Length: 322
Image 1 (cartoon, rainbow, N blue to C red):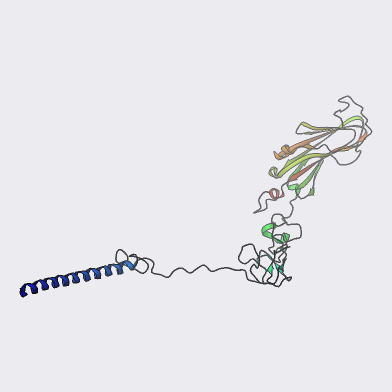
Image 2: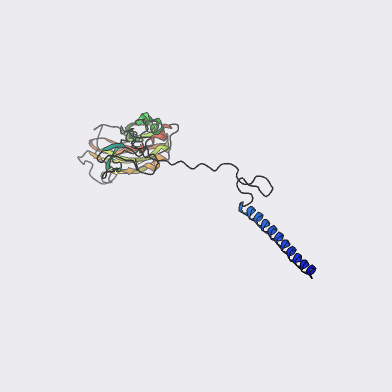
C-alpha cells in the first residue's frame, strides 16, 4: 500500500515538473519573438535589408533650410516678401531711407524713399514712400530711367540705335532731272520739292507752262508715308504723277483748256493733303508734271512730305525696325 501511494505521488510530481519546463520554454520563445518585433521593420535606416546588406539611407539627415530675415537698419527688403525691415525694433517717430530694390537704390531715377517708425512703446516701420523705380530708358530726356548708371546716349545697349547719327535724306530720294530738291524736316522726315521754287517767274495771258521732275526712291522699304501737303501757284495748277493727275487747284478748271476766267488775281498757297504713300513705297522712278495756267505773272511748285524709318534707311547693324 505504501508502495502504491509513493508511486502515485512521484507520477504527479513528474507531470508537474514536465509542465513547468514546457511553460518556461514557451515563455522564453515569446520573449524572443517580441524582442525581434520591437526592433522595427527590417531594412530601415542603418538596419539590414532583405538581401542581408545595409538597408535604407546610411547617411545623416539633410540640413534644414536656413531662415532668411531682413537685416534691420539697412532699409531693404532682404527676404523678398514685399516688406522692408519688418519685425525690426525702432523708436516711434524716427525715419530712415529705404528702397524695395537694393541693386538700384539711389542710382538715376531710382531715388531713395523714406519710411517712418510708428506705433506705441514698441514701434514698427511703416511702408516705404517716395522710392523711384526703374523704367524703360528714354534716350533723349536727360534721365537715367533704367537706373544702370548710364545716361541717354552713353547707354549704348539701350540707346545705341536711337542715338545713331541721322541718315542723309538724299540717300532715300535721288533727283534724276528737273527742278527738285530734297531737304530734312527733322528725324525721319524729308521734304521733296517738285517744280521751280520762286515767285512770278512766268508771264502770259491765259498761257500754260509745264515743269517736269523725275526722282528715284532708293530705299522703298524705309517709306512710312508720302503726302502732297503744300502747293503754291498763280492762277491755276495741276499735278500729275507717272502720267496720272493726282490733284488740281483751285476749282478743277484749267483755262484755256476749260471754261473759267483766266485771271483770278490770287496767289494760292494751300495744303492739298493727297496721299502718295503707295506710289513711293513701290520704289523706282517717279515722274512729276506740274502744269500752270498764268494770266499776267505766276509760278507753280509743290512739296511732298515724306516720313521714313531712319533705322531701315541707315541700315544700322544690330538695330531692329521700330
